[in-house]
Image 1 (cartoon, helix red, strand yellow):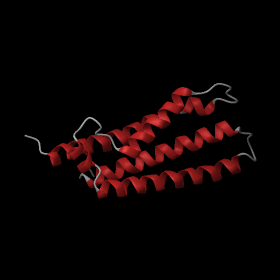
Image 2: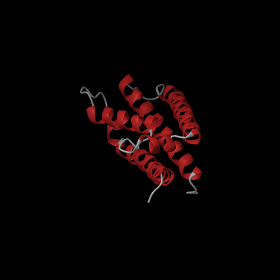
Image 3: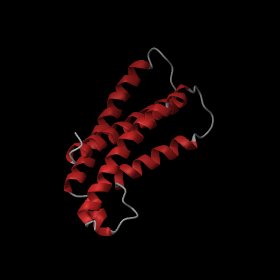
Length: 141
C-alpha cells in the first residue's frame, strides 16, 4: 500500500519531468508565433499556454490527490525550488529585455512581439529551472 510520502514522491517525480518537458515543448512551439509581424488578433492559444504553465509552476499539481499528499508534495524544499525558479524566470526576462532593447536599434519590433518573447523566455526559463531543481532533489541527476 502506498503511503502519503510514496505518493508525494511519485507525483513529485512526475511533476519534475512534466515541468521540464512542457518548457521544452513550449519553447519549440513558439517559433512561428514569434515570427509573426504585426499580428492583429488575440493569440488565445499562446495566452492559454502561458496561464496553464504558470498555474503548474505556482501550484505544483497533485490537485486530484488528498490534502496530505499535496502538502507532502509542496514541502519546504519544493517551495524553495519554486522561489528559485521564479527568480530565474525573472532574471531571464530581464536579460531578454536588455537584448530586445539593443535589437530595436537594428530591427523594429512591436510591443506585442517584445512581450511575447519576454513571456516565452521567462515562463520557459522558470519551468526549466524548477524541473531541474526538483529532479536533482529527488535523485534524478
